[in-house]
Length: 133
Image 1 (cartoon, rainbow, N blue to C red):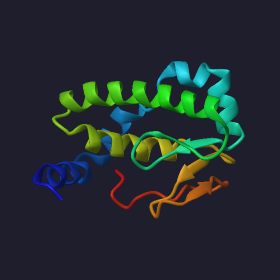
Image 2 (cartoon, rainbow, N blue to C red):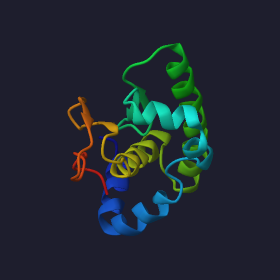
Image 3 (cartoon, rainbow, N blue to C red):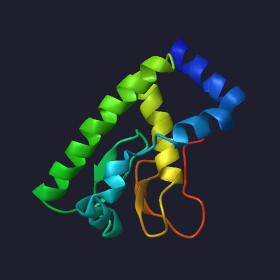
Image 4 (cartoon, helix red, strand yellow):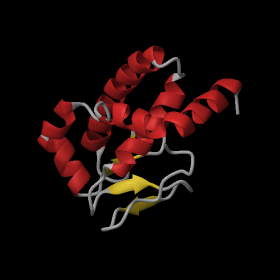
């Protein structure tokens, strides 16, 4: 783990709730929530939130892959901009966003567990990486 990653994780521990709340407002682009194709892919379990902050494709065809790619490109641009303002790497910022996005999944939606497996969210809290703020 790099010194920057250690510093960021240490700062999450100290400012975890405040940092998580600051990130929660930017966790997913508003347009994605309004896109019927995205909503349908989430509801059907064809896509899910990954621990690295990006959308993963679990099933479906080329249309689903293209949709996920489009969303991931926009997420990366957002993460790049916001990471710079937080003095973090894009990967560190994206990881934190992954924590927030997984926490925000609804029952029945897919997410990636810390071991890399795809899980379906139940009524309880999702499995999250212990480093999550």
